View 1 (cartoon, rainbow, N blue to C red):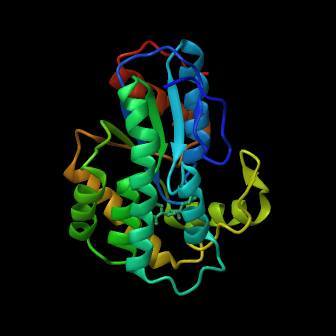
View 2 (view 1 turned 135 degrees about the vertical axis):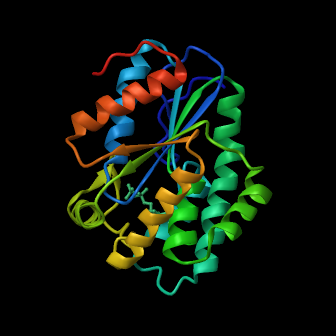
Amino acid sequence: MAPKRHRPECYHSVVSTRPRPGRFITFEGLDGCGKSTQIEKLAKVFGPQGISLVVTREPGGTAAGEKIRHILLDTSTSALSPMAELALMFASRAQHISEVIQPALAEGYVVLCDRFTDSTEAYQGGGRKLGSKTVLVLHQILCGDLRPELTILMDSDVAASVERARRRNTTQAGKNGRGRSDENRFEQESRAFFGRVRQKYLEIAAREPQRVVVVDARGTPAETHAQIVEIVRRKLKLAAKTA
Ligand code: TYD
């Protein structure tokens, strides 16, 4: 894959360009747990060390995926059925895998992805009560069962995270300059919904301890960052220092 400039419509950016075997790392957690900040900080540590990074996110990550994201997160999208929501999450993901993730992995990039199928299992499977099985079957069919080799699950307090996400979405103009003032559809869900999401995340971590590392995200961003750098460094077998 040729080095690309940041494409804001796709939200994937190649931070540096030295090829290595592809590695797929995902970040998960409740809304407002601080994932985006941590991914940005991590990219600032590893990018300058000559590691080829693609930073991307779901839903979204491609031009089509960003349109789907808008439907999914916009508060004006009312009465979306849980199954339609599930289908759209997977539509975005299938496109993202074929257009961004697989090509990047094939060319040796380290892909840092903000949310992946664990989000669907936690939010649609747990939060919307559609169950894990449905999500995992769809993942197998639509995503070729692609699995990250490492997932950082940022565990945080339900009330504090959701409060932070709500504040952020109503006061911030945007992540990387893109408006997210109306990306509130999920933040309007109940405390019970997010309780189920967190419970499902912890279930996934207990089921797949080799892949999923739970990080306590209730500390300061710097403390969380130090933990994440160490975990990723060990996984990638790199000698990275914290920023
Ligand atoms: P986003 O702004 O990316 O998350 P965060 O608030 O953590 O920065 O919002 C994505 C929203 O979509 C978030 O509420 C979780 C939800 N979501 C699902 O419900 N299922 C999924 O499969 C994915 C990828 C996201």
